[in-house]
View (cartoon, rainbow, N blue to C red):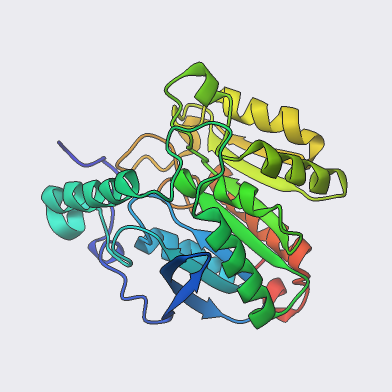
Amino acid sequence: MTLPDRDIPPAAVGDDPLDDFTREEFAASGRAHAVLRSGTGPAVIVMTEVPGISPKVAAFARQVRDIGCTVVLPDLFGVAGREYHPRAHGWRGTVTTTARAAAQICVSREFSLLATGRTSPVVPWLRELAAHEHRRCGGPGVGAIGMCVTGGFALAMATDERLLAPVLAQPSLPLPITPRRRASIDISGDDLAAVQKRCAAGLTVLGLRFRGDILVPDARFAFLHKHLGDAFVAVELDDDAADPAALIRPHSPLTEHLIDEPGQPTRAAFDQVLDLFRQRLGLDGPAAQAGR
């Protein structure tokens, strides 16, 4: 296997020590996980994609922090800070890092990988975490973003009125292996009804995907449009907007496939996420302006 043609400076590929984050354990709802935190201001819960809190996920979190937020990253799987690009640890390291994270998810009882009409069991813990961080950080409420296997978690968390800015980045569960699973997302009927009520009262739910992503099919976003109406704002990107240097097909608009340059569609999508957090969390001071 060969790497994409686009040159990547060696200094851009390596493990992230995450030394600007603190690490602590949070226990609630019969579960306990480590949590990484950084920044001040209203809290934003950043739920990671496979293979875990990678350097690119941490870079995303830092940009959210820099608009005036406290970023809170639950460490649910993988090795925090580990770079999975082969230029850091070779192809064996890439395969091992990804496979271990996937195995953790598959054996975990916290993720609803295939079930339709069900909220993943870890979501009550995430709601408690969001409530705890709101009490700790203050502000009008909390933001949350899920990515890939955690994408739908941000929707299910929005039953709590403290969650003011839910973002669903490439929501991939349930795995879309049947028509029914493609036209659904990992949320129970009762939780969906509660979110619909909040949407009718003014909540906005932001969703992002690449149009050709087989893990986030058209039918899934059609389901969200049907049930949430105009409250669901879809950001759908053409596949050729993705960073061609990425190791996988277009999937992660805010991290792996982000081209962080002015005028790029993925950067515009990134800015739309930041703007939702600014607007809903009341970030209109100097820190917010500096992040524009």
